[in-house]
Amino acid sequence: MLPILSHGHVHDPLAAAILAGAVVVLYARDRIEAAGARFYEWVHEDDEEPVDATAREQYVAGDITLTEYERRVEAALDPSTSRALEVLDEADGIGEQRALQLAEAFGSVETLAAHEPAEVADEVDGIGPTYAERAVETARSESRS
Image (cartoon, rainbow, N blue to C red; front, side, top):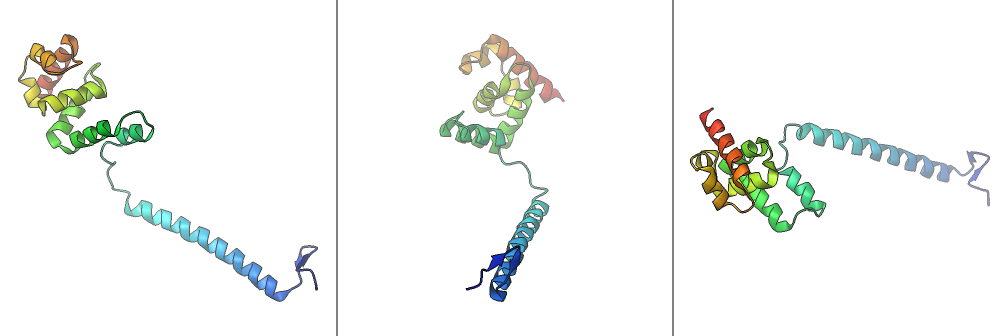
């Protein structure tokens, strides 16, 4: 029996054909996968970010519980709560967690703006007078604009 490969040459024509076919298939597979990836990116280039991508990343990393993740997604899907989250998250020192608590408690920027800081501090656990005042000031400022 002749060796199939010796000194860099293939001696068996059938083995050579199979080897060449395998190379072509592997090359074609890589090209098709690359083209598929480019097509997927082209089709989805205008897609918005997934709802609360940060919460999803935190949940996957184990930083938040499933209950907390679901709460954040629900808040992000409600337009008035979502707007309140965006506005309050930008307020100095409020942060994402407090913004979420305030948005859930009051539902909208306008509702929060209608409350006094002392009421806000009493209504939401973990929100003291300083944060309540910042939140109400931010909500009132946003309501006027």
